[in-house]
Image (cartoon, rainbow, N blue to C red):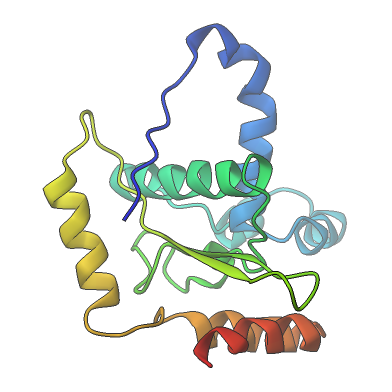
Length: 173
């Protein structure tokens, strides 16, 4: 596996706080759906219950690490992360099973190859290659392919993105 350390640049903190807060919200909630609820009910106790962001500190930190990894992959490495899986977690205060995220680069032509990146984010004070390596091995085990590839493909089909869903399933071939 490849370890990509992300270190905060403290002089940029104010600059990114609002944008990052927005991205955290979007990873956990569908903004259009949330807006409809606000228009219908206002922002009260009911809407607070529908917000899919976790309250437990450990889960919040883990999700934050996953979001940072995904944002890095999408903005710097140009990977597509088609499913924001936190939106589908029935218990936001517990971590979802499976890989933290799947990121894709789909080939534009037959001469190019597609890529898949399996994300396993760990929020640690100092990097521990053994701990992170064990987490990666637990996720993949003896399988050649990520466990959640079918999950991603199914959600893409439900969203009307059949071609992208088929491209995701091509990784199994």
